[in-house]
Image (tube, rainbow, N blue to C red; front, side, top):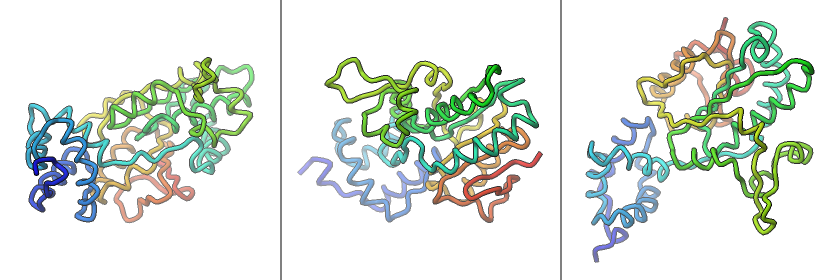
Length: 285
């Protein structure tokens, strides 16, 4: 017997692991997720040379080894849902309503940089979409050097490395309109590689950083005008959601906007932001 695939993840060990994931990352692992965890952890346990699930849980909970392993575990238990121009109506709202309002009332992007946070950026499709949308938007202001900073954060080091590279397979960039592809993507010099890379002007607007929403200090020193946190809070219970959204609110400029995922809701939460459109909220001035 011996391989991890022959081991059984006991209810006790599942509870130990799910409680650790919740306390460290705020991610809920209900009992219905146990088969998924069993399937996905087998390869990881083998690669570490551990005997069974119980040994693995000791390893990930240990203060000595657990910090690095937690990052690996998050990759195992979460699915990065992302694509370019996902939920396009949100980008339309941003360009047609939010940005003109922020420019008018705050001088955002004109007298000071427009600050945007892609919170849970995964492999970079969202922040680079924002960068492209803002490049297009700035064409409405010829003669003005429109200034934007985009912070892209995620808990997973693996997806951040992919985002920093700004290299994508051709099928990944399919949702980008053809005209924007011509303007903002570079084909690989190696024609056998069906890959593209974001142009430097798009890449330079984005900085990537690892951040765990459970951290005491997010390390943000500047207030954010726009926060995109989409399909991250599906993993959180209401108490965690409320805590995270309240922290977002403290880090936003008055009048700033929060964009969430289609399957998410902030209903019944005690938070200081108000809904202004489906999946779009605003911090009152």
